[in-house]
Length: 366
Image (cartoon, rainbow, N blue to C red; front, top):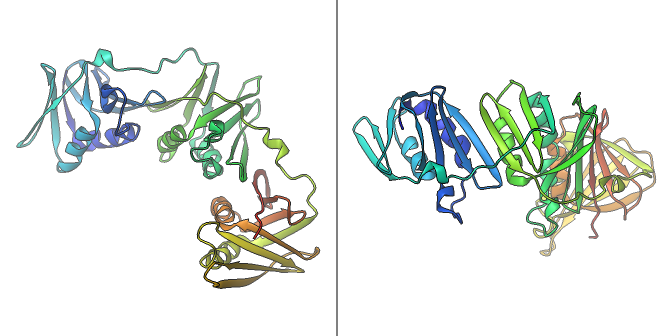
């Protein structure tokens, strides 16, 4: 294999794939990138056997072929070169020779035939999606995924496909985020899949800066998204997501409507003096008034009052302020609606004009 490629063509592709490469690998070849050069250009592949990312790059292919190149060393070399540089890359005798202007590099290589691949079968579900819609579904819910929970099925994002919609749900056992959007999936079935955290990060990276439609395919225990020749394949979490419908509050007797930005700012200021470990704040409700309050073991206190739309009984309830701020951060509405029943029941937060996104937060004792 021998190619000539501009740094500005190569660098975005290397950045796109190298995030998948773990610094410590059980198989040495997984620290390398698979490089395929043919008449269509160059494709670069990275995998950790759970996630596989492929990026395409334009290049002059002098001699077609395939090889593997150490990922991080190649990326560091590319970053260190001038923006206008071009690279001559050649595989010869088990070594990778890289020449750019007066710079010369020789890297160890491993056979391309030994590079593992995530084999995909025929797609059971194939959907064409607007990337902005997919971005919205993920961004509105991913923050509620669990971190290294022993209940491994919580360490990912649930996608629920039905004939006319896609729903995403995440929960860590203390809070839940749900977002649903109308999509004509053209599929006469309902299916749930759980995409792991790392896969979600790579999918976001793929769709974050494009207006072109994304192709989503489901095959067995894998999901693949393709865009302009670039792709992300992810091995799904093998587990059953809990029945999240049971968590959604049904009997809401108290409804509070507040200005989202004002509430977010007030909670942020109050949280400065909250307990650093538990991050608890107290919400004290009375007619058309919400008081936020916090204290810490150093006997420091913070309080702030907000005018709100509320005409119910007085109520005092505690929450982890980080959970509240996470929700207020992803909502784009001018106002936010809090649905409450009593001091021991969970709270339902929503955009008053969008009942397709729901956020549930369990209370805490303070």
